[in-house]
Amino acid sequence: CAASAFILFATHRQAAACTPPMKAIWNNTVVAESDDTVVVENNHYFPADSIKREYFEDSIAHTSCPWKGRASYYSLRVDGELNKDAAWYYPEASPAAANIQGRVAFWKGVKIEK
Image 1 (cartoon, rainbow, N blue to C red):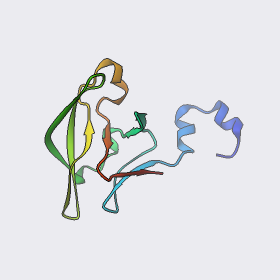
Image 2: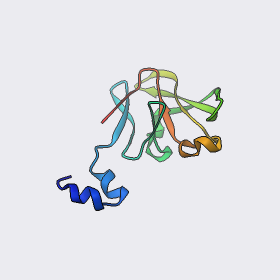
Image 3: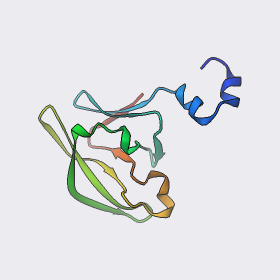
């Protein structure tokens, strides 16, 4: 973006368009990409429609967070390699975490970068 005046008067979407999208990368493959991530506890939560579903497999794993709720997991499979439970999401987040409900975050070697 060229002018600070543009940023000052731009809508959120216009300003976001100036920022390179965040990418989740595993095994040299982009598995999610979005310019609309939400950061909570240093984790980028990607919108559900930004993940590349062909790399995701449902997992039976679940964990519980006292303030976010019950998390469900996905495993990633890229080029025949499996990264078990490498992504998580809150299908029914608590009211305190409503901003990440349904969004997907990553760990276990998944790189998040611009």
